[in-house]
Length: 130
Image (tube, rainbow, N blue to C red; front, side, top):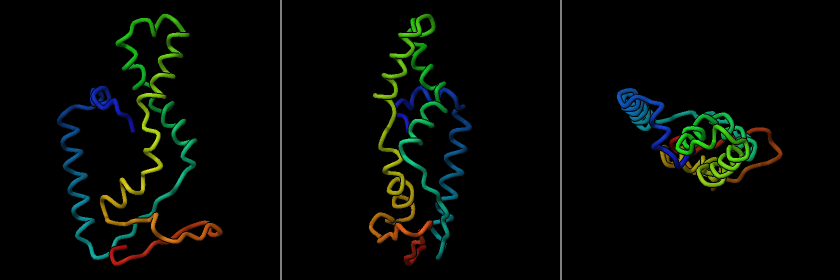
């Protein structure tokens, strides 16, 4: 979600990140080999999600801010720093592209090409793999 991946990586030990990636890749390969898979996902209001995510990961903004000592002494500088981070580091299209990034890329499921009945509270997608 953040373009500032170098600072985010400071939170995770290299060995743990590597093991995490290996486990995720293994899970992905197992799922891709199955004849049928069931994926259940929920969709949340993207604007609320962006704001929520920004404040949930506020510590990331302060890592960037530590490069500027004034952020800890002056509330106006802190506010401007957070505004700058929101405008420049937050990937606002992350949630808009979530289906393509996760489902289409990993499982070749293109949800957005299907007809969706907006009167229904849920949507079921089926193809040869799902």
